[in-house]
Length: 181
Image (cartoon, rainbow, N blue to C red; front, side):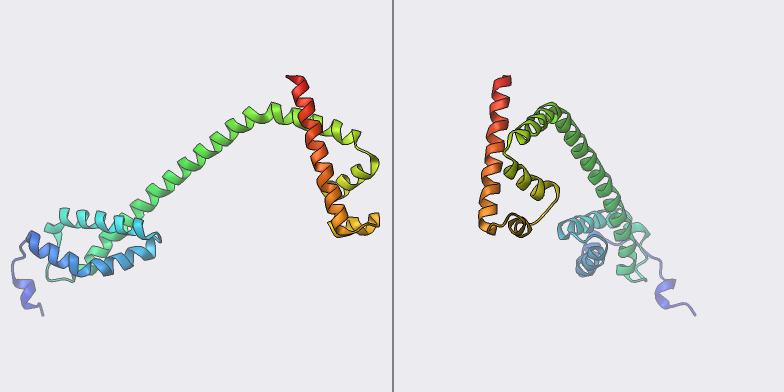
């Protein structure tokens, strides 16, 4: 048996009727969209786009049926569109960042190679105890405590010696770079 409302001719909603329906369901739409688009600002944007899409299609709405499920279908489409666009944008940003990093890597490759060569030379010039300390800490990945036990020193003394050795290496590298200029 058909309902009385379905026998009535359906007329498009007026702007005011649409606004009342939309505003009454806006919070529910936002909750729905937030389940799909976790960022609140983005979700609000999707709801705004949904409102525009709903208004454009208002002539297709059947007032005899609930508004929210109909509106949620539009919100789902808008959320999907937003997520696709965001994914493309993120991919472009990632590609841009990757390109920038690659350019930067090329720019610093030669100076970095020169620094590595100077570091090798400077390491070779260190006294044996300092070289053993650097090798143990950086290459063999021994802890300060393990190095202290091996060298028969306190952890604080090993830490200070390592700090002085790093400074000496830095100064050696800087001197070599200055003589190249």
